[in-house]
Length: 104
Picture (tube, rainbow, N blue to C red):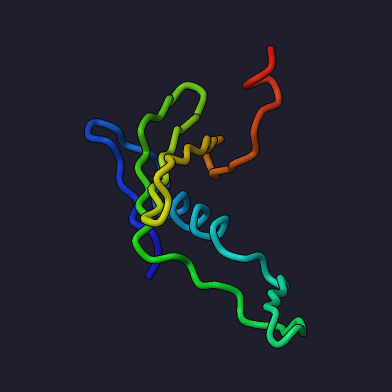
């Protein structure tokens, strides 16, 4: 299982497998997370949900100069696009957002 990661034609990103793995990890429940459901008026611990099937991820653009990639996530059950910004520092991918990116 897992996500499908594609690049828009003409775009090549470094460390594609690392980016795919990091996106997948952000879509999963963090280790130690507990999930509960209500059964008969009582909260009962249950297994965390699995990674949804059919999630497609497309790298729409990548700026080599600043290492920024705009990534489009397509979830089959939602009709709304999700865009994430990922940064490559020459070695690793990160989804940390520069505070100055949106507010100037």
